[in-house]
Figure 1 (cartoon, rainbow over the protein chains, first blue to last red):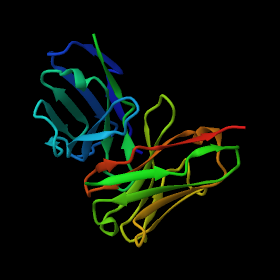
Figure 2 (cartoon, rainbow over the protein chains, first blue to last red):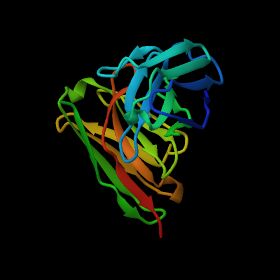
Figure 3 (cartoon, each protein chain N blue to C red):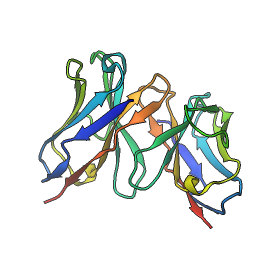
Length: 108
Length: 117
């Protein structure tokens, strides 16, 4: 089973700052990696698919990069609504899916 | 617009059973694979089960294999999860999610299952 490790577990930043979240896979997942945002009491929302493609309606301040085993989600300038938990997800062995353990982005 | 509405959650004793439903609308349900994903209180996301668009292929996480059954009724635009032999560790919010061929592009709001005596 492919394990996804996200870092850091918690990231404390202020609005307007740049956020960089990491996701590392235990073996190559090619570009089959997605990022989701989850706010308290809500379902996850797809942000990025295939490592670097923004989903429909996602603001341009969100970007994804990477391939193989190392991936990054970048939020260029944090808005108040961006503070949430972020999960990466791989589908190399689709339809079986694995998620990372999440990174909590909190207001400093 | 796409809507996924789960129902059927509740409190059940260990060893008991429960059936979850997910009513879909706003898209051609019979053309898309579907998944169940769960989230234990305060924890991360865990994929549970997959069913192909026609119901002919199904896959399960090892943690639920042999106890849970995913199914669908395309005439009713509804996805199901039959959960038997429930354990305390099955306590979670259960989400249904639409598979767009790449990832989960739409999720329901979730239904809470609590396994407790």
